[in-house]
Image: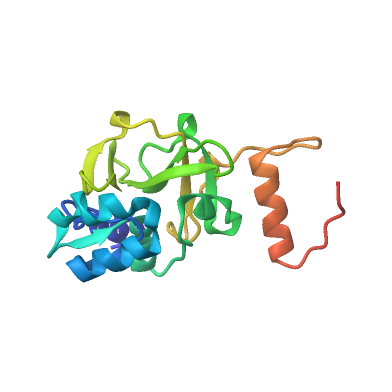
Length: 198
């Protein structure tokens, strides 16, 4: 079984888990919720109130669910949806939802407002379905891709080992700009190439 299939099965196994803001997969208890409420005071009322229904269950927030999914296959994603998206080296390819590879396991994002580029994240299973930690009232859901306004996707670097994801990579020409160019520049610098500043 390849990494993508393992990640997919891991995500399916989390359906029905709870949601607590800042939770990292621990079993929910009143003491755990109190600690998260103190850590995130703006969310305290939800954590101490609505999230009490998750006591005794494993709990995540959206970005910790995707981060733990990556860890389950030996890959790495930082905490926070925006931090994940910004970490260019994490991605074999990424783009807007209109270019989502329908048959690939991907991490999905919803574009945020203001200073944070992404406000929500989940796991696309490669079959039209998504697993995401939706909120204190909902927990970890299994829903159709079309049921939420996802805006971006990323295929984790190393998830499809030995497979060249050529069909997802745009052809770059002199004068090209945008996300694909930034990714190529980041990869070149990661491998020790000094690039002139433009």
